[in-house]
Image 1: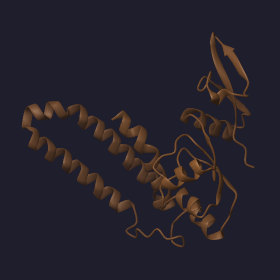
Image 2: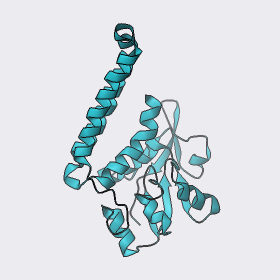
Image 3: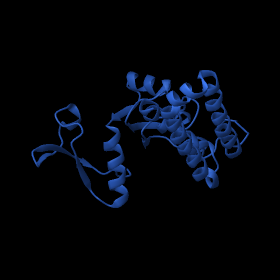
Image 4: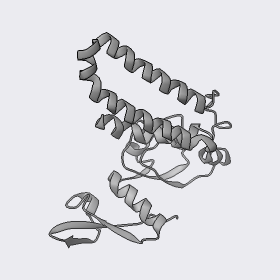
Length: 206
């Protein structure tokens, strides 16, 4: 369950933000969060249910819960699944349409090949990508390995804290993540209570 949340949650929130109308995003994220919680609870009860009603009935019960969640999601996400540049929703589509180049994007992932930031990558509109992992975007990986794209990979927690520091008005934060590795090269380090920390500056808009 933990592995599922770690790998699927960033992509899920990216897709929700881009696919769901603004006035329904809070509902969509609530449904997703509820699904994760319900799935975790069902996983915990799986052995008990199996002993009580058998594996076939257990599978049916869990499947019914999945169908209910699917109907809820279908009620929130628009039926039009068009992903063309002109009709893709959100600010990313506007950037694609305006052909804005030399962008520096800060995101924990680069979306997928034909959606989200992947649309900008396809047209080589992103100059630098600051991410915590490459994800499932083949074009992102290709551009990174070929040297076409400047990529800064940083730990997920550090990425989140640098974003939070920028929003809160803090110039920098100390974090233990990355100390003793190339992540800390050229950065200020300091010891607190016997533990070493790396100074990470808040993100700034170019």
